Length: 115
Length: 109
Image (cartoon, helix red, strand yellow):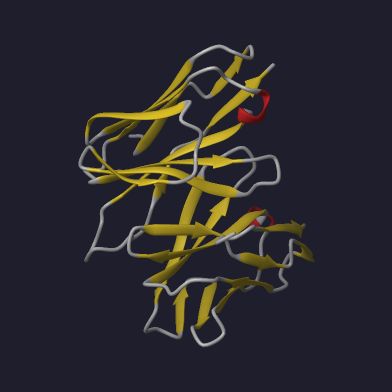
């Protein structure tokens, strides 16, 4: 059973297109995240949702819009894709404990290539 | 940047040797975590140490934390070829979560 799953695994698209990445967790966690890992392997948090409510929105272009239909799903929609958006995007989830972030469980990643 | 730094960036050792990786962070923390990332895969949680702890063990892993220096180290003893991966530290403070830059470990058989 996959704890945190993402689709698609690979996404190749042209500049200017709009695309979505889906994430689902079956761990019953309250909080989900999106991270971007660039070519130098830096992992940067983009968004965090707790029970469908946005709690972290780091400096990310507003072309990126997260959507959480329920607490088990957090999708990432990207408008007007640019070359610099090429990266691996990871979804993660955690069960917030005592008001602070505990262990995170990561999905396998989605490698986005913008041509 | 609020991300931490890891040192060394890359480490190559022989199977059976110990591997030590260091991490420095910039903010106050509730806890510090270490993760492993195999090539082309997601991150896997290894160990968590709370801000009031100084040392923690889990199997072949030993983590230390020095909050006065804002640093942590991960020691992998008796390394195996299967330990080859990138290792990241992550400092957490309430709902903030910052990853270090990672150490790429290569264990040669």
